[in-house]
Length: 112
Length: 114
Image (cartoon, rainbow over the protein chains, first blue to last red):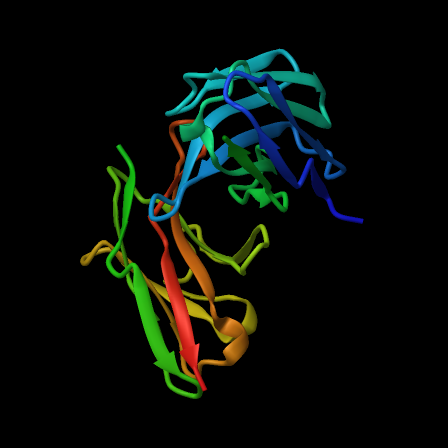
């Protein structure tokens, strides 16, 4: 079983719709992250969380919100989707003792 | 502030020839540096990481990278490319004093010709 899972893997939606992307992990890590990937731009940090009660904005948080429901679950919401939020979204986890981040398989979101 | 520059957006090599993917970093202190690989329609996988131990770091699948402080570089190399190496590669710097946040380069797409 994968250590970091994301659902859905693909989603097509319309402008103005509310969308939730979900991430679950079985690694027991405290830290979780949401990134978006656009061609030629690498990955950009949207939000990150160091425990259930800690949520922090990343570089590109406008238009997004998150919820850390449990240590193992971190959801990303687009309150009112717009076409320029079409991208590949990755969830990642890490623990405080190691620098390394572990990535989920990604969610491809298309906003029409 | 930390930052990473990947000098080539695309690199094309023939199978069996050496691979060189270039990365320069900017950091106020000794950084942690990583290379991740992303195969088509897949997530990111760690290739190798440098965390102030040996300057020559060996990773998976025959890749290695050398940390050169004087040149602020962390180039990724492999002696002989394989078709399965075709992927996108990301150089990443971790900000030790900012909760180990990751800063990604823009990526280098490696094409391997038969």
